[in-house]
Amino acid sequence: MKVLDIAETARRAGVPASTLRYYEEKGLIASIGRRGLRRVFDESVIERLALIALGRAAGFSLDEIAMMFGPDGRPRIDRRMLTAKADELDKTIRRLSAMQDGLRHAAACRAPSHMECPVFRRIVRAAASGALAARAPRLSKGPKSA
Image (cartoon, rainbow, N blue to C red):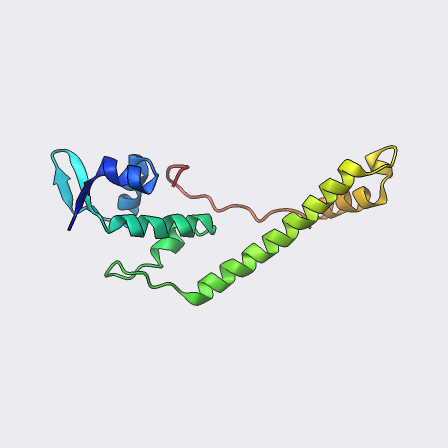
């Protein structure tokens, strides 16, 4: 078993030490002790941190990620939760693609004014109706790099 201090763990995981302390506070990771005043971790924490990073990149909250680990620390990922997140991402992609198309049209539109362009006016109406609004992000406590 290779032991890493908090600085080496942070460097290898690509996150600040404050994030590691926060993850430990949330129960996502656990140190195996201390070397002086510094926390130390088993090298296997690097893979767990990679799984946490993957979950964050996919848009899962830290609480949702915590539910993806069993009491023994092994991943136990709910496939329905993954499907629901994939469906949510599909909706986001469609909304962003529509917005991208609209912006490209507005940039190239030959109408004298954007407000004279029927396509742009349709986009404005969609925005006014809330059809283009993104789902409000979940507020989570912790470091922004988490």
